[in-house]
Image (cartoon, rainbow, N blue to C red; front, top):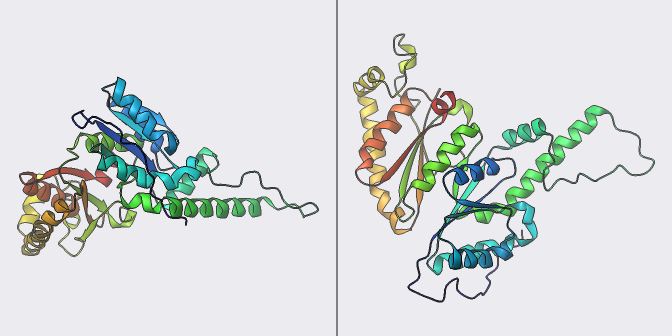
Length: 321
């Protein structure tokens, strides 16, 4: 992969006392929900631009800065693949000039992406959709064509991951593999409402049987703890219900693991704040994502809520609402 390169440009504003506003860059893997995310930001009051070439980003922001006071969200992705090497250094330059730039990177598992492209029958931007078999070659069977198409799609997805890998490293990642559009809209709304200048601690519950969230910075496994699922009256409840909470609070192992996670996060949060991180996602997983992980997320969010900004997500429960 060709590395991102530094570029030189005139500062966005020549007036050091002028107010610099917030810009949200929406990027990520094709098929991960960028259009849904951009529509959510538009509903939240942002002026949105889709697929703006990175070469035009600075001039566009300068124009907005001079004539408007609206918040701006811009989608940039692999459709501008030839311009991507300029994007990362440009983001660093804009931040150095005092502009608040949030980069939200939407991602999803390869299986989820293949399923979405198959359902919509849209080609991947990096797919070679015009390729024809050599002259004189025997016609391929339908199953062979389908297999070749799937393989080609997976190759395109992996190439896109490689092209966007460095950009992903400086972004807040949102895993949409298990999200419905309504969930993604809510998560986008919560992220942009958070104070970018403070570290926001995101607690997320999930079920291991549906995969580990791709956006997790830390993952804690609570499947070793007593499971309320096996208590008949607690099975239909969730970790947000009082009966489940009381049961788990009575378990010494639960209290010990909770204390250890609390201690670990308390120890390292200052380091993340010093590193100027905007978001830190802590994922708590159990078997079904209904009882233990939900209880841990609710409890930890309450404990840390008085110390730092916090957000709560329940991947499996939110999918049912």
